[in-house]
Length: 140
Image (tube, rainbow, N blue to C red; front, top):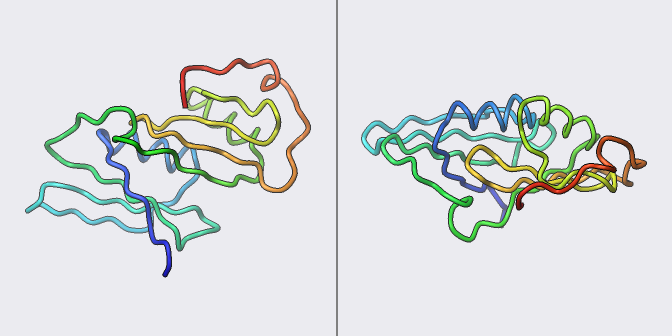
């Protein structure tokens, strides 16, 4: 058995691609437009782990998705420098819901409310500002 992908529904494909690709750093691996079903599938993967994908499903007519789609937990990514990626996300307008105060773990949310856990590769980074003093925001 081999894990293939996780599907998340998105209400704004452009905003989601900006978040996942431009800010988070994933790459689009393939795309499928299905006019008969009125949906688009966009597959994304981390550059160093192309075999595991996230499938963004954009339904052309339905856009009301709340709280990360019923009982979905979160997506988790190991990152090389948690401070750099959190800075890039924050500079891109993303709220850091659980800052990496410990140099090890942070949580953010996608434009559709999907929780994203970021975990520092290897040992935690030494604590540094502004992360140490930053409070939690909202939920994750």
